[in-house]
Amino acid sequence: MTIVEGKAPSESAIETYQLMMPHQSNPSWRNGALELGNINGGAILNLIDNVAGLVALRHCRSRAVTASIDRMDFLNPVHVGELLIIKASVNYTGKTSLEVGVRVETENLYTGERRQTGSAYLTFVAIDEHGNPIPVPPVIPQTDEEKRRYEAAKIRRQKRLRDKLHS
Image (cartoon, rainbow, N blue to C red; front, side, top):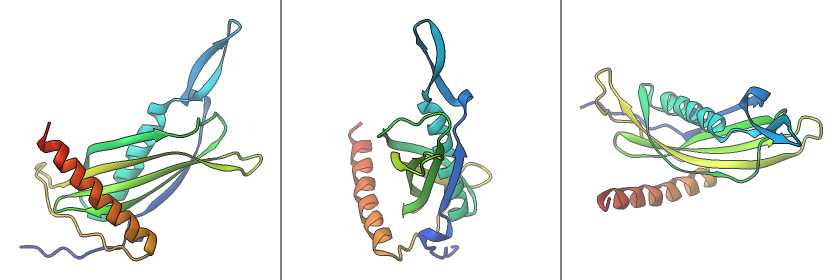
């Protein structure tokens, strides 16, 4: 049996930035003219899944596939020309799975104003070259905030498992 060493969330955390462009927006019509709308939620979800997947890969050092997205809350719209900031880190690990928490913010590049625009929790399963689940390194929270996120994630995991039994 292989012993897997634990890792602090900071070892695999990622913070990334992307300028939101017109091709990512929902078109809207006003007075018969096409104008740019807010950024498409699907474009943001794609970025979230990609960044969270990289966090899972960095933590496991193996392939990891998205098993679920618990929920995605869009708290504020994202506009063309804003800087999208995605912060992601491992909150919790099971035997072969891990939860990655994601916080989404925007920054108005002209004023410097930042606001939270969303958050999500994604579950990944580490797999080998044949697609079979493999053990993941345990996450070892270091800071008070990491410990709080770990405990909250443990409760979410228990709820996911209960919901799975009753579906």
